[in-house]
Image (cartoon, rainbow, N blue to C red; front, side, top):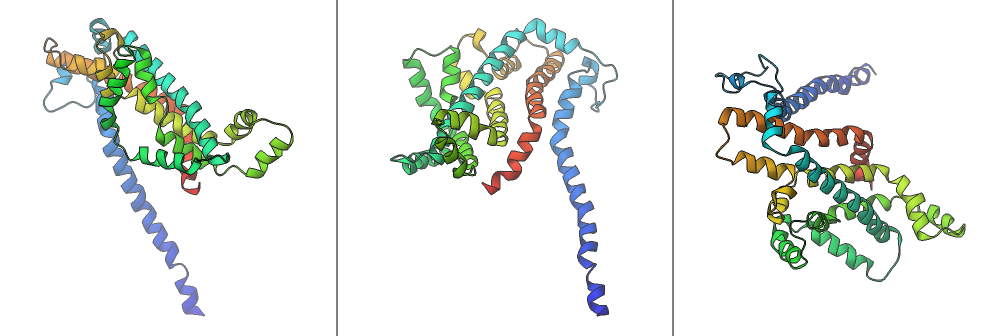
Length: 288
């Protein structure tokens, strides 16, 4: 009896030892991932002397907003910011609507060829996005949508990942709930809009963050599909400015850090607003 009693606390002691180790590893990983962002954020407020100091200076000796002012003078940042915002918001809204509609159809409606459509969605997930750049450009060019907002939005108005995500979450909605709504006389659109969507808010929040982040940071397609500088998005405008041989190295680096910080801030705002739903969606994704 004494041997059994003595052996019980062993797993607890092992757990107490593992937990600090896991916390230490997680903290180390967080530090590694956050270091570039911290350097960028601090460099945006550094003077030219701090930017060229050797050894590098982490904390600015004198905080300044000069980099932001010079950036606004040399680049039409409000216009580029609005271009990125309009494209990202439209792409996100279209994905939320179309992906949830197709996900609902694949999860809850019985129609001929449903399994084949879902197979096409799975196949589309395996196709690298860069392979589609050329055919998308040819299609948009023939439609006359190059250098337009429609040309930046339509190719990404719906994605295979979004359809798959929404379909998996909507599979967990009880069929009895939908049948009860149909018995009460509700149509499919009412069921989709008023019954199903409120039950999959974590999936919608997850899709919102992923889609907004991907569209906001998209660089290759806006670079290919826009020739007019007035249609540039923020990543394209900053990349063009970074390759400008006329900019000074010290001042240019400070302005690049300021511009990069402006690019990151909207994504952080979206994540903070939807953090609770996003975390819940990731935590329950494996159960769907």
